[in-house]
Amino acid sequence: MINRAYIEAEKKIEEALRTRATELDISGGGITPYALTALPPSLGQLTRLESLILSRNRLSELPPWFSQLTKLKALDLSDNELASLPEWLGDLTELESLNLSFNRLQSLPFSFSQHSRLKGVDLSYNQLQYLPPTMGDLTKLTSLAVSGNPLLDLPESLSSLRQLQTVGLDGIRLTTVPESIRQLKRLNHLRCSINNLTQLPAWLGELVELKTLRLAENLLKSVPDSLGNLKRL
Image (cartoon, rainbow, N blue to C red; front, side, top):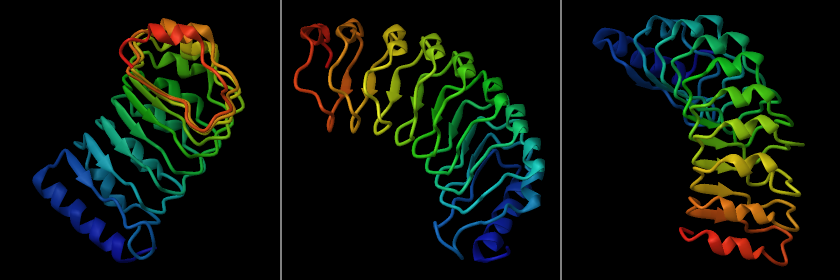
């Protein structure tokens, strides 16, 4: 639908084409007529783009021509209405930062593991019940946020993400801290608030690089003595 936001976006795209821009912000105002419900096809001509912000719009799908933006390194699609992602999203192999928080995603495409350069992924506040086992292939990840999803479990393959420094697991109905976290020896920040934790594993004390450990609003009555090993907290 062509609305005020669409017209403004076309103007920004025209200017970006003229200046051969590598960055573009066409975030919306969250509500119609200040939010995009569809993307102008001219956006597909900006093949030099490395950073694109599309947050706070009302996008429910990504058009096929979006796959032409193969130089993207940072993509922000937060606060939209995406219920699924196309398989061709995996063609954007240069991505290093991907923000998909506050959408309606129920699953991730199989091709998600093709984003081998990703360093930061935010999947918070969607409707994900599972993360694919292939998440473990994203070995360059330093930040992963999945807070606010109705996750039933976390894949064991997360233990392969040895570069992770920040993990957000707030509000995902955890009853125990996943064993896969134990292998993340570089972890600096771990958020597990608003869950159903009744106890903490003693091995948390092995994560000696931790600077932040958030455990508010759980069912904990005590913590293991091994947390005393976490001198950086």
